[in-house]
Structure formats: C-alpha cells, structure tokens
Figure 1 (cartoon, rainbow, N blue to C red):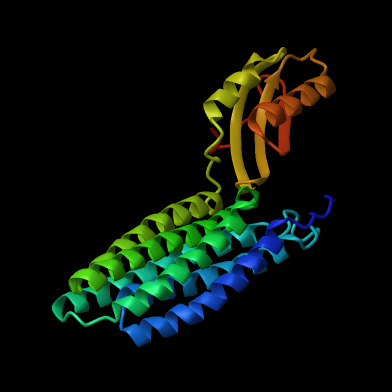
Figure 2 (figure 1 turned 90 degrees about the horizontal axis):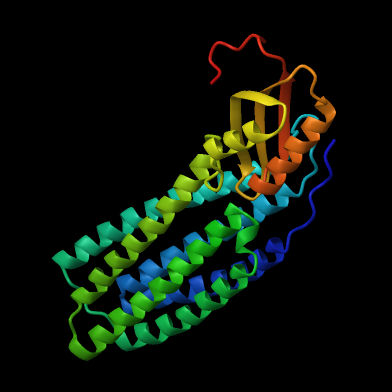
Length: 294
C-alpha cells in the first residue's frame, strides 16, 4: 500500500483566493447592473466562474488528500483533473454568453455610467491581482491549481479591459467600446480555457506527458547493458505533477543479473524522465507478444 498524500500548500492559498474573489464578484456584479456596463458584468461573470473554479479546485484538493485504498489504488488525484476539465467547459459557456450580449450591444448601444464603472474596475484589478499573487505561490503543485491561476490571471486582464473601456467611454462617450472590450475579454477567456481543456483531456485520455519523449526513453533503455530490446512501452500520468507511470517489456540476455538490471532501469527512469511508478517485465528472446501491443 502507498503512503498517504500530504496536505499541499495549495489548499490554503486556494481558500484565500476564493475569499477575495467571492467578495469582489458581488461588488462587481452589483456595480455592473448599476452602471449598465457589459464589460463590468462580463468581468463579474468571469469572476463568478473563478469562484466556481476555486471551489472545484478546493474540493478536488481535499479529495486528493484522501488515502489510497485497495479499491482506488491511485487515490483521488484524478479529481483535480476532472475539476480542471469542468472549469474549462464552464468558461466556454461564459464566452458564448459574453459574445451574445456584446452582439446585442452593437445593435443597440447603451449608455454606461463610465466613471463609476471605472472606479469599480480599478478595485477589481486590485482584487484579481491579489488572488493571482496568492495562487502563483503554489501553481506548479497541480494542473488543478494551474487552472485556477489561469482563471484569475485572465480575469485580471479582464479588469484591465474594463478599465480601458471605462476610460474610452468617459472621455469620448463612444459606448461601442463596452461591447468591443467585452468581446476581447471573451476571446482571452476562450484561449485560456482551450489550453486548460486540452491539458486535462491529455491526462484523462492517458496520453504521454508533454515533458517525456517516449522515443528518447526507449533509446536510453536500449543503451543499458544486457538489454536487447523493448516493446509494449506505455507512459501516462495520474496528474501532470503526481504519479507519472511507465510499463513495458524489456528483452534481456539470459545470463543478466535481473535484480541489478531492474534497479538500474528504475533509477534511470526516475532521474532522467521523472517516472514515479515503473512496471517492467524482463524476458528472454522469443517470449510471446500480445496481439495489439507495440
């Protein structure tokens, strides 16, 4: 049985970021309605998504702390990946709403109380900046935290966009800026969420982690003394930062010291490729192969 996971710093930082983001979502939502600013409402809805993203991230982090059992031998680490994937999908829903509302504003521009909008947007920038700074301290711990961090960074840039729209409307009264900036924020959200969805799908589909070159790995294994061949090689991860796994069949000389060879291979894979869990079947030449192995 594996050791229980330790509580990461990210759980505390996620909680702090959630408190900041939730508080200012309420402020910005009310401000958006009062000032009639789509850019401010867009930023507020994005902050709501950040709130949900942080809630998902916190739940996933807590689940990941649950002990590994005989029924769940990899524990609950994949909960973090599911949370990241759902966050990305929800972001796309928000983008669709933003573009619809912006299109309506282009057809019928609405007057915006630009000064009040500008003041609220500046406070929003400060709140988002604090959240981003908090999460940056643990963003490399998991894709889950990275996803939450990307949400907050995108929202920080959204606040910059809302400030820009407020300045343009305050000085020029050109209210199309509200819809235009909203669409720009939406495009930014779409881009960041696309990367999040792609990265989480790669893990869920058990693709090779992006930092590992399987061909290079195979060459290094073949360079080890007494190794004559490698086949049925698989590499995947439970999360991008936890439990990187490899399994494969290694053909060896009949007279090889197999215990020493296994030790050498496990050390090599850990040091050079970051493989945490290694399953290697040593075999002589002529062993049968499975029908669909490669």
